[in-house]
Length: 345
Image 1 (spheres, helix red, strand yellow):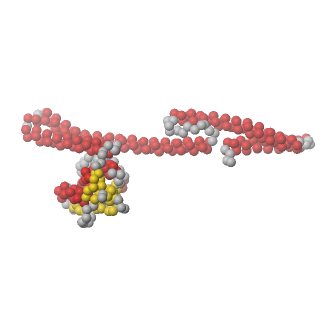
Image 2 (image 1 turned 30 degrees about the vertical axis):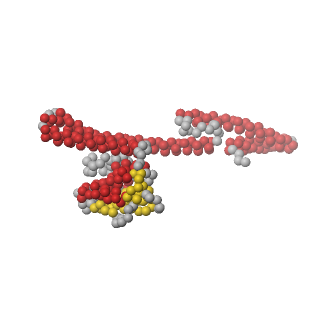
Image 3 (image 1 turned 30 degrees about the horizontal axis):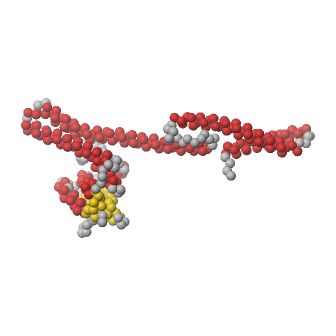
């Protein structure tokens, strides 16, 4: 049976007190030449238990009062967070518990600081994205109100530009609304079986002119003679593929290539790969590219357009399908985005 440290401490101390008291008594009586050998054992046992009881009471009370003060000091913390066992004199156990609690709180505080920095950055990005089209619309309307309204040609041109600004605002708001629905699980997926090869080819056809401006070739990694059937929300997967292919064109080099390929993953999964030989992404940016409004290009001009929400939406759509998305990139060489889908029947 394991004895608590506090009891071992009291017992060992009482033993030493009793032992040295007996030795002192023996020495004292040896000097007086008197025999007390018959009483020594009884004297030792009685002294031991008296010392043990006094020590146990005094030491426990002494330590108890100080530990209780520690509990009182931390009572300002949330009761649901701090453990609430009965007050104990086990200093080692209490120390470990407090250390564990402090480490947990330290980790929690660091996490909160990261979230706070992310929130500030997110709000700054939202502000930037919204104020640009807002100021554009405002400037054109104010110009019209200041007298340009009477000039039919100028009025029509300015209204067109203001309309583009409103469309931009509506686009950003719709993207944010979509992300919000995806995050709270409010978006209902309409899964169906479809040929992913045909879907990719239709996206290639739609983006052919955009790619031609930079002489970028949109190709498959090989010829696929047989259809590849997947089970997913076709409209949302089209959104994912369009976004990834558009990005590869945006950040691809002239005379470059955007390549789409497919790999079998086990019996029930397909891996879709979108590979380019464009700018690539720095390693420090890879872990954040799926954040809302996060941009690799930090310049104020931002040579490429977009809301900064595309990759975040891509990630949420893929995860809504209970699938995984991956990214590999080497700066100056190119990038590969890939994600899994369930095979259809």
